[in-house]
Image (cartoon, rainbow, N blue to C red; front, side, top):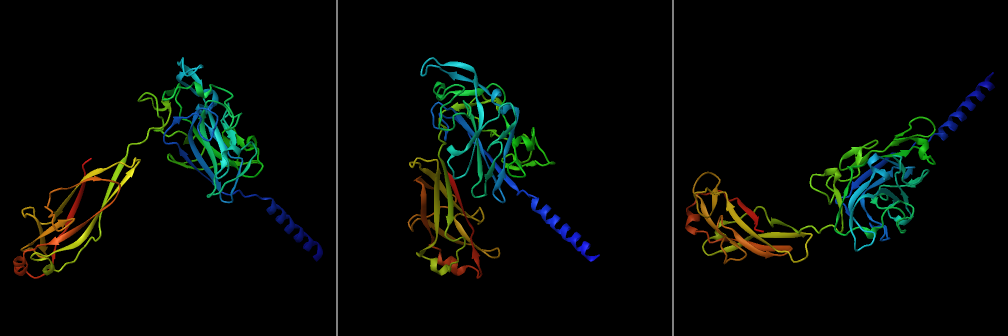
Length: 411
């Protein structure tokens, strides 16, 4: 009687182990999307190399998982990103550089270029939406790798051609890049503000059409998947059509007020104007002194002032003019700088000097510093020539003065 019971328990244990071995738990998948800040058409847009290619990079997203595995990533896009729906208006010539005419039906396509960070984009996978919102950006069945250090990248382009020829091939559809007019604006015929969702399969070797039911991943059965939360400037978005592809302020051309129906300029992005910043600091925020060391003709260094000048987008020739003004916390009725007693009472006048002992600072009057170039500019601050009689007649105790330095850019 005992033997059959032991066999039953043994068989049950093996069955549980077998089932557990068949269970696959997919690792968490993460994604970030960064839209291009400004859109300008290029001929060609990197990494495409043929001058027949014409387009712009709309943005890029990064995908990675806890264990580095990503199964059949799919981007779902809204209808305005379908290749047959994107038409633009602008000058075009079949015989450049002459005979430019306004073309009102120039076709463009949204194209995805997927590759792992650090690899050659030429070995990546090109794809695009046709009449279907589902785009398997790495292939209909794809097991790709992506870690936080080396994520799987998907670059999104608006191009004048399709994906057939690869990034080093020539344009095979649409209008060749040579026919577009440099520095001209090309406007969208209809609002162009596509958005996407990102989904992945739960298990390897999963066919895109098996786990994606149109725009929704299947959650039951043998082939399942889920939408990935995409971190982007618009927030953390999960699901179909939740993450905007185009930066709201990214359009470089078109008439003011057109919004999504704006346009894109063919040419180089203008260099931003130089931005000059200043930062003022003191070597010491508090200084303790003995009054007898600063009376009569005695003048001593008490601090150093540093004015840092930084230039963004500069050419190396930028200069700035600033005013430096010193004030203190003594009553407005008093002229000059004054040390205040810890209790209300008589004050002790004192003098400050800028840069050297021969340049007295007048309270409230600006000290001009002109033609400052990028870098660090340092000046010493001195104190002294305190009336010795005033010190001797002053009440005993602690005297303080709070000096405020104001920097004003004159340019």
